Each structure stands twice: as C-alpha cells, then as structure tokens.
Image (tube, rainbow, N blue to C red; front, side, top):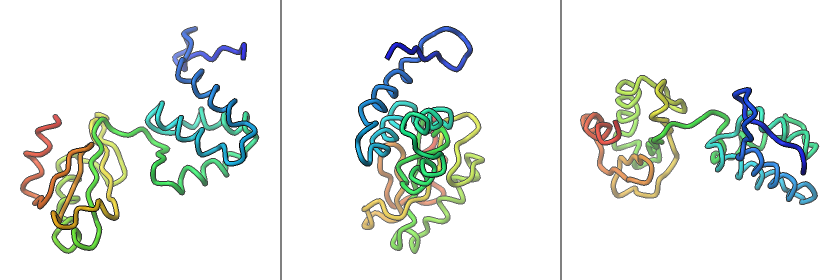
Length: 165
C-alpha cells in the first residue's frame, strides 16, 4: 500500500491510526464476516466509530453504509459517538431497578448535566444505562470504568464523582 493517509487537521502528518485500520481492512477484504473485526479495530483505535472512517470501510470492503450502520447500531459494544474519559454504567436490571437505580440515573443526569447515552460537554463522562451488571446482591449497582459501586444511593453520587474530577 503506497497510499499515505494524512490526519484530518489539514497538515501533512501521517495518521498512524488510519494506517493501522487500512491494514486491518486489507486483511479482512476477502474474509466472510470481515466487517465485525474491522469495526472492533476501529472502536479500539479511536474509541468510537467515526463516520469518515466508516466511509472508507464502505468503499474498501464494498459494503453499503446502511449495512455498516445497521451492524454498528445493533451491537451495544459499538458507539457512533465519542465516549467520555470515564464511562458510568448504571444497572437497570430487575433487582437494581426495584432498589432505586432510576434515582441514581436521575441524580447523575442532574450532577453531570447530561442525558443517558450522552457524554458531558467537557468529555469527562459518558452515562449509560445497562440491563444487568451481574452484581444483583449489591443492588443498586453502578460501574465507573472497572470500579464497581454497590448499594449506591442518590446521596452517594456527588462523593463518588469527586473521585474522578
């Protein structure tokens, strides 16, 4: 591949991330079901699936954008928007919901000034509601990054957030 890919800033700097993605696309061009591993690599590299990169995938793998968006939106692992530095997941499974998880979400939305599924204006936090985090005995549960918080009350939220600000 002699083609050079430059960064989006308009400079002549080579975008090493895009070079990496192009190699993965090349490796999966003839592989049936190759779209998923390509999307995984893009997600791992960029933290989300940028539309301009998906257009390259569409062209190189000869897959319509509608199909790519269909796959990307079907799997919860993929994100079409940039994620925050810290991802907050609040469990809305039955045990957590019954024990007040909605109150946690309401307080987080208020404290962070963000809606569920969105990222704060400063890019620090993304708030997500999940079905089950597998810690029902600690309900209600939320996770920030890899850290699990159990038996959380809305009053606990400000102190928990202080750990990440």
